[in-house]
Image (cartoon, rainbow, N blue to C red; front, side):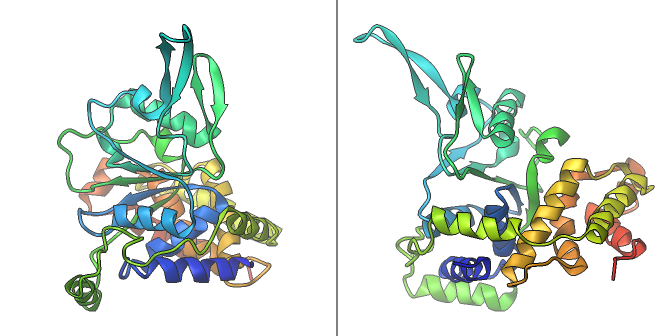
Length: 315
C-alpha cells in the first residue's frame, strides 16, 4: 500500500464520523506516518476526542484515554510497582501509557510531575519504573487536547513539552453547511459518539502504517530545501515579535512532515510547497511571543506568515 492509498482510506474512514476538519484529519495522518505526537486545540464540542477515537478504530490500534485533572499522579499514567501478598514479590502494574494511541484529554489540567512523566514517554518511547526503563508498544502516539479559552485550574504546558509535539492543530468551528450535515446525521439516528456504531471499521493496520512511513522516509529532500528549512527557523529566531524561535528539533520534524506530505501526494520528492503546507502547525507552538507583540495583536501564525513572505523559497 502506498502512502497516498493509506491517506485516502484513512480520510474516508474518519469522514464517516467527523464532519469537516479536513486540515486536522490530514495533519493527524501525517503525524501517524512520521511517528509524531499531536496537540489538538479547540473549544469544547468541535470533535477533538471523537477524532482521536476514530483514528484508533480505523487503524485497529489499542486506544486508551486519560482525563487529566489537577489531582492526577505520575503513577496514574505510567504505572507503579505493587506488592503481591500471594507471591510475596513486587510486580509492575502498567499504566494507560502502555498503548498505541493515548488520548491525553485536557492535558493542561495536570500538574508538573505528571507532565514530566508523560514527557519521558513521548520522547523516549518508554517509561522508567523502579529504575528500569520499559519500552512502550509500537507505534506510540499521544493525541493531547486542550481548551484555549479556559485557564482556571490549568497548568500551561512547559516549552520543553510543547517542543515534543510534532504538530499543534487548531480545530475551528465547522462551516454552516458542515454543521447542517452533522445535525442531519444525528437526526437520522447515527451515533457519532461511538465510531464503531457509526460504521467505522479497521480498514488499516500497523503494517500499512509502517509501509507509509517507509515511503515517506524515502522521499527526496534536496539540499536547497534543507537550506530553506534552516532559513525559516532562523527567521523566527530573529523576528522582533518573538522571544523564542523554532528549535532544531522543529527543523527536523518540519522536514519529516514535508516528506510525508509529498508521499501523500504520490511524489517521491518534496517541494517548497510541501514545506509551506506544514510550517504553521509544526512551528506555531515552538514560538514565544513578546508581551508587547501580543498586546499589538500578533499571533504565532501571523508572525509565521511574515516569515514565509520574507524568505525566498528555492526554485
